[in-house]
Length: 424
Ligand SMILES: Cc1cc2nc3c(=O)[nH]c(=O)nc-3n(C[C@H](O)[C@H](O)[C@H](O)COP(=O)(O)OP(=O)(O)OC[C@H]3O[C@@H](n4cnc5c(N)ncnc54)[C@H](O)[C@@H]3O)c2cc1C
Image (cartoon, helix red, strand yellow):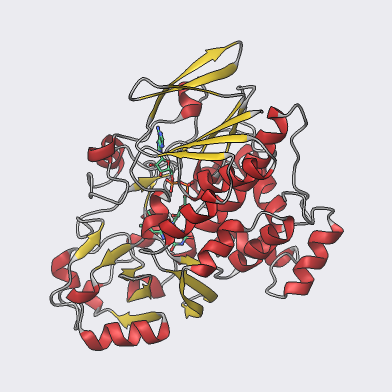
């Protein structure tokens, strides 16, 4: 049986593992920590704006397991926050076990936790095996790099405010290692508008027991809260440094915009604890992710691999990529759907077939193809972030008629594009 090895168990890696397993490959998924989902462990918001369309498209294409898992672990549906409509929010505590159950449904898919890839064994431009930190040799026919773009600690220090002790837990499990870079590929780093590299992650989690009960009750009832910040606590500069450009609008520095993912999740890269505690109802607030959310946040988009529109990494015969590794892509949905295509194509190649591109008459096809165009033609491309949820790419979806929450309309264009069930 053809063997696909996926490195990195975030949303992209889980999507890739399922995408490949559905094609009948024997799949091994390596994750360096003791839990799947990577940065998704601190996430929650999906189906907001164009992410709704993308979620429905991947389901119609036949690989919607992870969207189903999100829906099964959702705390709220149809939530609004500034500039974002019809969002759903998953429970950050229940999400990882729900994903594990989806992966366990595939007998040909094996998950190895605390298995950190450290090196590759190459021959004639192909990867033959991944070498783990424990010196285990994991051989395969085709490989997928879904190691993300966040950290290491040294990068969070160099480009940010130091290690903020985030959910990736590098001191415990070791730093991110890029398979593509180990295979000799030159990666891209995001550039900040004001200079410097990478971008701050844009959200922090606060323990519910440390916030005033009436605010938590309101948050749990509505799913979101907008708490105005006094003028002296507002900081417009925060908008320029964050990864999530879909939240880089004035309401996000003029207010505390909060969602309920099981924590009180504030959509801000960081906020000094003293300032946070000056907000009525937050006098006893305490950060739970990152632990030092008063000082900084993790730094992302430091290691994107060049790739074609099948998601094959340029320069290595048998390596694919997905999620943040495949572009300046922000979001769980974005990671899960690009992962699914990478997994599907890796399995096709492993079985002796040809990888596919998704047509640009679908939001997913446009998302994957357009990134390469922008990076190739526009030096400002390196400072853009791409998400179905807002900013630049949502406008493009709207212009092309690819943003809809009409189930039948989405099904129709997926059918017309010839991709209905293509990933099943
Ligand atoms: C605090 C925070 C909140 C967020 N909130 C939201 C939200 O509400 N909604 C939303 O859509 N998006 C949100 N995002 C963004 C979203 O989480 C990411 O864009 C997306 O999940 C990235 O997925 P990924 O799989 O590409 O990468 P990652 O999540 O970074 O996963 C990479 C995985 O690879 C593993 N890995 C790395 N190196 C190795 C190695 N050598 N060997 C084995 N494994 C390795 C890592 O441990 C990790 O599990 C948030 C991000 C952060 C940081």
